[in-house]
Length: 79
Image (cartoon, rainbow, N blue to C red):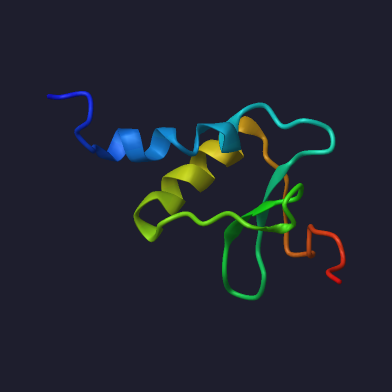
């Protein structure tokens, strides 16, 4: 396999910072707006763009690492 070949594990590794030990306060949190689930970046104040194929595994790893999870809006007020 060449080093430039794209694999599912390579795709996931680009998200590795999301499931590192959470800082205090955590930068990345799992947010449940309505019936959706997404990763939210509190520093950039927006959802992290994660493809549907990787989302379940990213969320699993974040939960395993102890990432906070809530239905409450985790960001700052916009504007």
